[in-house]
Image (tube, rainbow, N blue to C red; front, top):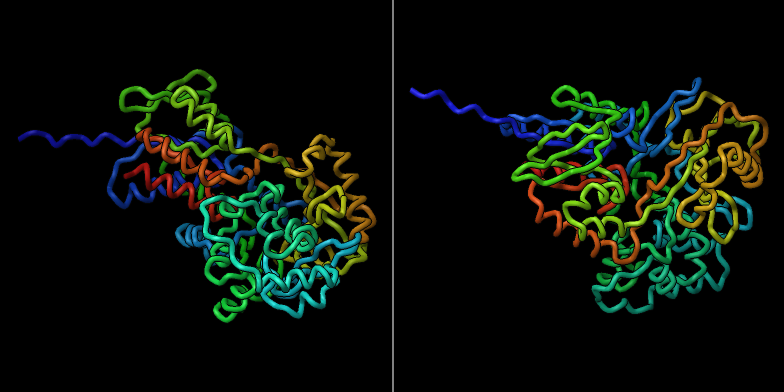
Length: 477
């Protein structure tokens, strides 16, 4: 009687140890265990730590987020991953007391009208009362409900063009640009609406008007969705002890079933017969059955250049912006403004040197000691790339001056820390989805290779998780 054949392990490499890479590795392990597949997985990370742009840090009695500080819950991938990791019970909601947003108008913070959801007002009276807009601007916004919908077209449209067409220039300049800019750090004249906020295009086609759509859908929304303003903070959550809780749980589960090689950049990948050959910076080469590149597209492009020049060109075509966050801790007694909101966004027309300020410890409890507050001030982005040339000290001085002018912040902060994210924010320009479709079709012709990350179909935490998990599922098919 012959011996049963020994099953060779399926060798998978994940290149990139950020959220998408860790999510991909975790999903490969989950699915392999469910299928009884023998797996040999290695995750390669070029830097000393996994986690990418996400990091939570203790500074004295402060809990400080150096990257994202929350994630949206109406995209299920984030909450679902937390459930599978066993940390769903650690998720906490945002604070009800401060659930609104502010926008700068003539140098002063003004409340974003209640019910305003990124591009469209859901309530009329708050708009009419708001000092943000002139009466001409308010009348132009109200006229939106009588404008015909644009004929159905496959042509992409910029966010600026859409808002200008439906609501007029004033709404774009004074509110939409800073709100959306705070999410994507992008120029609205270039930002693809279809790639970022397609529901508004769908509402225009279905209802003929965004105002009509908002009113028709208002009764269907939960109380959490309808409360607050701006970026819909009623739908946001975070772990009690910070976003890094998710990364730590992912890392531990991946480490238990795979090899994590930090400080190990990959410098080339090659196709050899049915294998992928990865070469590290120290000259070592290893063979794998499948590879997931969870990298910024410009880095992925360098690796696939020798495999497919056309794919590399498409990947290089996705532009990135750089930004920085100056995180600081303050005594509330040193601040004139009551900080009765989750944050402040700054329109481009205000000509300031910062683009937004998040009142981080107003969003979630436990982020600052009693009588103190954590501020996260955003600098740079696609429209202010020159600010990234400032030294850390220069950037701190700029932020201190701006916080003093806009919010009446004085005194010496308990701490200040500059966190820089160079070429880290993908820009979803008009035509983005067509480029992504081209990338995906080319990758489909390279068996055993997949791409993941926030550069393709969403920039948020749930999008990054979903991208990594989808790449894992495709690899195992």
